Each structure stands twice: as C-alpha cells, then as structure tokens.
Length: 188
Image (cartoon, rainbow, N blue to C red; front, side, top):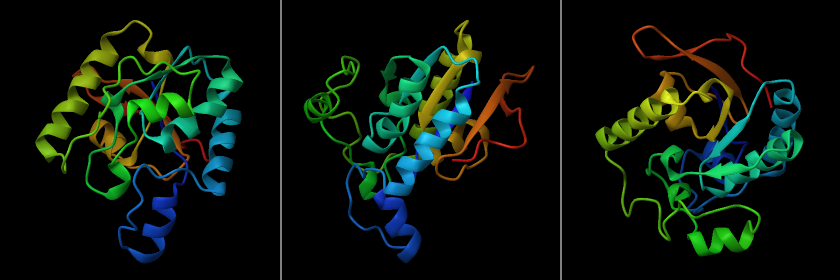
C-alpha cells in the first residue's frame, strides 16, 4: 500500500505561517499544492497501483486527480480515510456540493454530511484507522492500493508523519502492523 499525503492546502499555508487556525473549511490546494500533486503523479506513475482510495476533502480530491489521470484509474472516495476533525479545514463540503464539483466521481458511499459535527475523540479516530487497516490489508489488492489522505491518518496507521505531497510505501509485519518499506518517500 502507498499512502500519499495531500498537497499543501490554503489552511496549511496560513497555519504554517501563523500557528493560528485561519478558519478555512474544506481548504483547497495552493498553487504549490497543485505542483506537489502533479509531482506525486509523475513519481507514482512507475508504481504498480491498481486502485486509488481518497478522502472526500477537496485537498485530497485535488491531489488524487492528476494521479488518477496519469494512471488511468478511477478514484474511490471514502470517508474512512478522512482526517481527524480538529480544525476548521476538517469541516468538509456536502456530498451534493462535492458531486457538483467532481461530477465524474462516485460519491454514493459518502453521506450528505460525512464529517463529525465536533472534534473527533482520539480513541474514535484510532479505532477508525485500525478498522481501515484491517479491512484494507485483508483485500488481495491491498499492496497495489494508493490511499490519498492526511497527516493525522497516516500517523495513526504508521506512527510517522509526512509533509504535504510526500508518500510512503507500506508492508504488513508478521504481527499485522503497517510498516514503512522505503526509507526515502516520494517528494512532491
């Protein structure tokens, strides 16, 4: 499995500069974020990816788009890989709005309001990540799956954070843990 963190979002840009939540719900990518997504698409073109899962946040969908185009694969949108709600950027867009913005994607597995109404407790977030891990690694195609997601979700799965636009390849250990395989992740 390959985990790709979305490119730089407007939230990331402003929060990184000030340390303050700028109040940007469902933050889109910046120009740098779009370049990071294109770079990830180029870097991942040589990987044996057969399935793309993506968070419904706009920043993740914008990151997945050039990868999907380059690989000729559909994007499977799933809230299972969304970020933990803890900031304004973790308030999403409704399924209706997403379907209008991304008419070629299937949002059938996404509820109208798919993000939690308040900050997601850490134990609930950890349980969601563990369930995803168990379900994903039980599939025969798990090793050929790209997951476009978020810093917190990647941290919950692997214990490691990634910078915007970076990715890492994972394997499953004998005791079922998700391990980073390549020490040098992709760089967007």
